[in-house]
Image: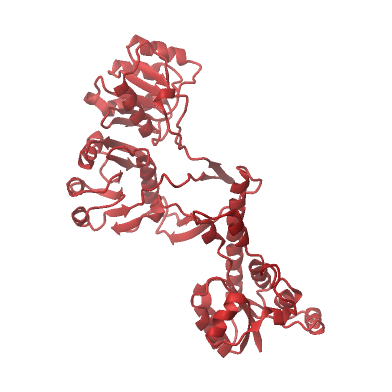
Amino acid sequence: MKRAIVSVSDKTDLVPFVKGLVENGYEIVSTGGTKKKLEEAGIKTIGVEDVTGFPEILDGRVKTLNPYIHGGLLAKRDNPEHMKTLKEEKITPIDLVCVNLYPFKETIEKPDVTLEDAIENIDIGGPSMLRAASKNYQDVTVVYDKADYSQVLKEIEENGETSLETRMRLAAKVFRATAAYDALISEYLNKQVGLEDPEKLTLTYDLKEKMRYGENSHQKAWLYEDALPKKFSILQAEQLNGKKLSYNNIKDADEALRAISEFQDEPTVVAMKHMNPCGIGRGDTLEEAWQRAFDADPVSIFGGVIALNRKVDLATAEKMHKIFLEIIIAPGFDEDALAILKKKKNLRLLQVDFDYENEPARDEIVSVMGGILKQEQDTLVEDPKEWQVVTKVKPTEEQLKTMLFALKAVKHTKSNAIVVANSERTLGVGAGQPNRIDSAKIAIKHAGDAIDDTAVLSSDAFFPFNDCVEYAGEHGIKAIVQPGGSIRDQDSIEMADKYGITMVFTGYRHFRH
């Protein structure tokens, strides 16, 4: 008779699986709650303590860590010495292991979790059995995921055992699972001790979907989500309409969501195109904010990604419906607004939980050849009271408010970044140029005749020369906000004074590469 050891936290679909094993000649060794569940279903089991000859101790911390268990798992069936040892020590081989782990992830996701609770949900015996069985996959079938129950049972029913290929596949799956389990534990404990730069960094993500293609059609792509996902995320959005998101859709939508999170106090609309805002508008109503975002760049917004920080109403939906858009992201949609927007079957509508204030910022990770870069998110909240006025002309309260608005916009624009804005909307965006003066020229050209005494120019980094200030002055800009910090800051200050421009230094750069 073959022997299986069964010990699971998640008991979903367990009983039919184990009944199938019994019907195919397996005796079942089990523990604790699993044993109780199986016996309640009429399945005869052998207690682990009957196998080991030793009781569970230390509140169940030690029960399967025993040679009578691990000897049965690790013995190579084609090795005469191994089999001789089993016989001499009266150890019965174990042919199948069905184990899943203590719910560590689910435990630490609880808002009121204590360190003690987390520690007690670190599984020791489970990973040990899984790893032992996986190491000996030549002879042992290891089942970690309930999704594999049916395939394993099918092969046993048809062939008397699983195939070597299946056992190897399941073993690889187990090592992925235990690696991810350990990574979550490591991350949690690192945070408990305040460690920011561990000498080893092990990250874990869960496959969400295989994508049709990547950035270009000849590139393969996969979407993975954080093992501890954030609610305020495109990956957690409820899609209410449209085709699946593409690789590029997700990148643009993510940047739009990051940008809209800067604006909370009043209805605001962000239009994102190729990872840069082509228009940001705010107003007393969402419809007014939309119109201003549209007016900022009615050409580039075509095919864009729109993020709104208020529930979409009918009036706003009717206006958005008039042009081609790829994606609309919002915290909600009124029923009549949704009905209008759904008339375009390919328009992707994403509803996102905007309760992001209660979620801690996660570090950002980007790949480079041979490694990764990891950094904190740029979640700095600018305070105009801390800015330094460096020119003869002092900013008005209204100009300071507009500067803050422009600074939030430039923060989400690819560097070198220049944004021209008034109190209502962006007027022009210059992004991603090799030099700052070209970005300034692009932004000011886009702004055009909309530049008046209320217009503000924002820069994501300092001016290396005074040419940007001079160009701004020549085109009617009366206020500039920038980090400062150049060895030629004085040149820019003098140029601002020449044109009667008020300029403030924030002290913080906001590069977005």
